Image 1 (cartoon, each protein chain N blue to C red):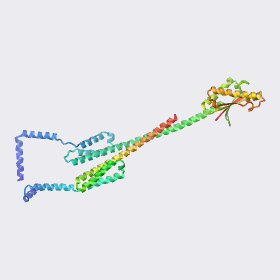
Image 2: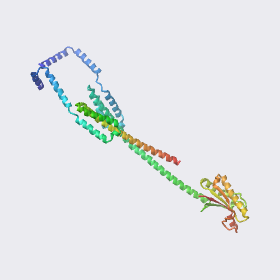
Image 3: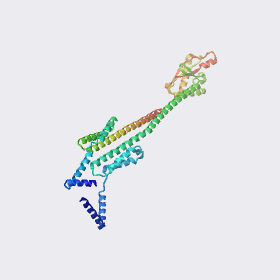
Image 4: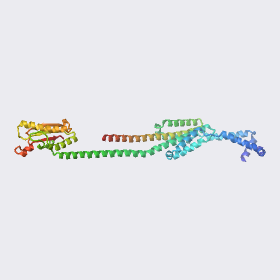
Amino acid sequence: MKLSTHVNMKTQKKRGLYLSKPLIMALSSALLLAACANAPKSPDGAVAARNRLVQLQNDPALASRVSVAIREADNAVTAAEVPMKDKAKSDHLVFIATREVDIAWAQAKTRQLEAQRAGLNERRDNERLESRTREADRATYAAAQARTEVEEARREIDELNAKETERGLVVTLGDMLFETGNAQLTGNAFTNLEKLSSFLNKYPQRALVIEGHTDSVGSESSNQLLSQRRADSVRQYLLQQGIASTRLTAFGKGESYPVASNDSTSGRALNRRVEVIISK
Amino acid sequence: MTTLTHSQKVTNRLKPGTSLITLLAGFLFLTACTATLPPTKEISAAEQSMIDAEQARVAQYALPELQEARSKLAEARTAVLNEEMEKAKRLALEASAGIKFATAKAELVKAEAVNSDMKKNIRVLKEEMQRTSGEQQ
């Protein structure tokens, strides 16, 4: 009975098709329009997840590190994009898709940070190396400078004809510095004194004690005065050269400290002198 | 052909019309049966992920994300008790995805901390060097 009605309907349909072709066409186009108007839409959440996934895929530096996570996210998003009437199921699929995209992003950023570490390590090593190199350079430079200074000081002291004694470096300026019985400096004096003043300018921490000495010719008191004036002349000259007065002390020692016998001319010449003692 | 003969037999036994209703009911019962099984696999997978995440101290770096997943897992268990098996399965899957995200986020937070620490060290080295080279001048 059922079968027969079915067959009946089929024949009717066939007849209809033969009878009004234009009607069918109009109907089908109407259906097509209706389908267009009600075009099934992907859920908004799925669209958002797709956009974020595409954003990740478009960043090759990030995407290349997490191809597996991206594939999983892509599958989840594709599943969520299918329009469906079951809202709960759709919401569930959107949730999963969103999380999968979140996971892919987080993993990509993590991988990127990890990849940056090699560069950061290199930068740190370079900084360390540079810092150590500079430190070593500085030490070498300082040592070299100290060595040069010592050598230079030694050379200058040699030029001054200084003698090392317990009291310090002693430079003896001979009596040719002065006219006999006079405290005025002669031309000969200047070369020696110039060396002395430039030495003092270079080593500002060193002070001088200037001592005048005479031979035994003349009275002791006049020799005392003369030795003082001669020491003062030297001090005066050095003051004019810009040496601070606090660094310069002048004494007259008179005839009490001879370095040779006063019996001979040559001995007395050696005794007439100014000694400059350079503190260490 | 066989279904036809079967329905014919039914039609023979019962009043016509009731046959369709019985068939439908039977079909509904069958589909309901497949969903009444608790999603044991999904729930235990989520539970295992939760244990792993706790051991990896994910809560220290992604607490809100982990808590969201934890409550989804609890909801899944409640849904099983209420015999809402499809809902339970979905919640368990969402919990798993949430735990995976919390774990990934914790890794990211840790990585960020490590890198910013490294950058800070470099900056300190640089400053130190500038200071000492300043002293030299």
